[in-house]
Length: 224
Length: 195
Image (cartoon, rainbow over all chains, first blue to last red; front, side, top):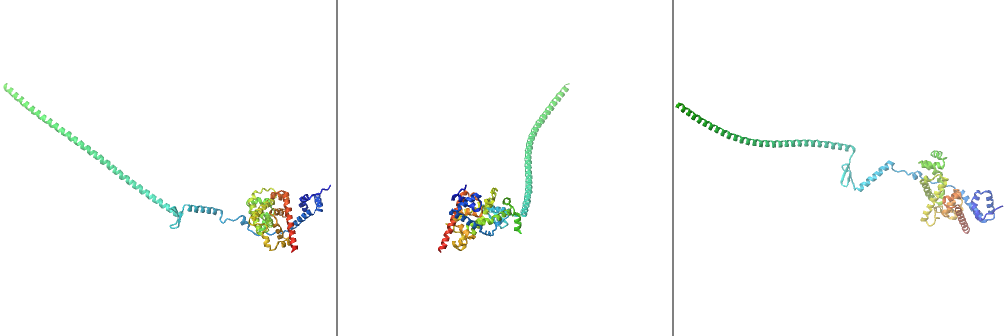
């Protein structure tokens, strides 16, 4: 039993028919339709025509172009240098933001808002550090010496003051002792004088009594 | 000498092997892949635009897009199909940008460069320029279908997948293109006979 295609069904199969990719039965049915359908025949002619033109296309040569440059554009700076460039950019940005002033007079000097910062070489820096260290040591020694001297002077002054105070105290003590001693001596002199007077008076009294007694005795003896 | 060494190294490698090496950082593998498809893509672009300069721009655009998206190619399906899907997108973008600059897409360089009118182009219809003239008169979506069917020899299912349309739509666009080309040829023949 043979089936006939409509134009629409035929058109669905027409490209495969033109390519020869249809199964034998479908090929036969499309072929049968094409025998009496002018429109589908025209479509098939167009397909074959375009296939023919396509097959006659001569591939054009691709113009030369720098693929390596296009895909892997070489960086003008190596990777490490890119870091340097970034650092330089940041540094310049900082200089701009801080309104820094750069001077090459007396070495490279970068002035951040009035405070000068001078960049020197490593050797010069070492020499400067040695000088500063030497100066510091000298200053330290002199300070120690000065302090020691001051301490000695202070000690001497203190000692002198203490000694003077001590002398004064002893002088006062001695004065007091002398006054006391003189008072005691005066008192003793007075006492001694009184004792001597009393003794003399006693002796005079004794002498009178002895004379009286002698007189009495002599008198008695005479009476005997 | 260098070309022979290159050919020995990458000549027999499959697309997937070249892609794998290119993704691993091999520039030579990437250039090997380009060498394999460059001519095909350039001629595709040439037929689509009709201009060598535009074709070169599109070729570079396509390859750069492929280069950037190569990691997203999962090895599913044929690489050429994936490649021409990208090519279709890039071409569509090109014509979209071109349509903003020119009122008509027919204003292509090949018509100026040939120094001939359309009728002369029809005499030389078997040549590349004649074909490009004929293609230039078609809308972009019809050009895509003709290119993929008659020059890249994809099946309708593959074309449908690449363009994001149904297989029947692809066939309809193809018949519409054929009809338009037949009409133009008939008009030109009548004009020639009248002259």
